[in-house]
Length: 77
Image (cartoon, rainbow, N blue to C red):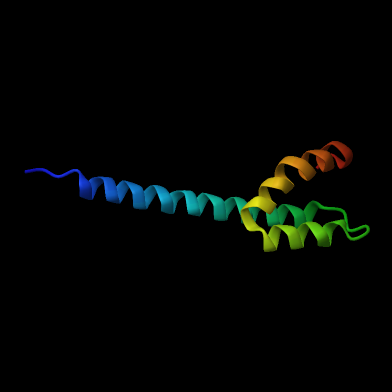
């Protein structure tokens, strides 16, 4: 008899691994973006870097959707 359980377990493992890999790649990209393109005036850059480092996925999402569009509109990059 053919069992779907091993197939489902493999799909679950690979989907979790794939999501974790994508989240890690996104986190690294946001970290590099903040390091290279965020203005160095004041403590904003340091605060964003600490936030992204210590609250990895949430910090990266908040930076990407809140700070990055503002910076792109203001500075153009």
